Image (cartoon, helix red, strand yellow):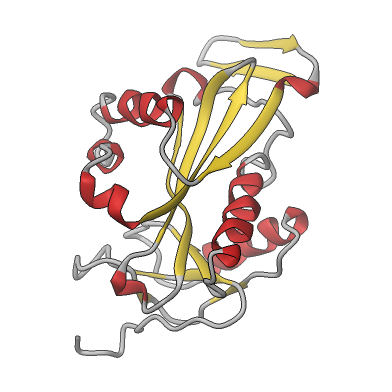
Length: 201
């Protein structure tokens, strides 16, 4: 594995064995996922409050994924069963990266997406389908997105590595109550049941 640290002044490459990276998924929040979410929530990023593990988040979360590098939690996410999703499960939700690793390339590297995040997606699909939920989706907040071009490109990148087949919605779908950021293009498997931007409620 190559870990590449970037700054405005230098690039440092450190060689490490690839087998020091692993992803696990559990149905209950572990101490490590709590630690990672708390670390991210304290960064003062504009979305950092999304990573506070409030009871409302725990109520909707079906499972939690975490990626380790040398036993350090570096990537985290959840699979979410929000009533707004009309029976679909949002995978790789609350996706976050350890702030200490945000400029590093680790594990399997990147290809339009951090490839190790695909393990989050695939493991969460497997867990939630075993729980009886057939349909899963992903989305991301992007207030500047006027077309699905970026999401369609991301869908192609995910399909290179995921063992599941994903499609991108043509229209924005309702994934949150916010009238602007709550409408997003989604990447879904099987069928999608979310309301789109043509709905009045």
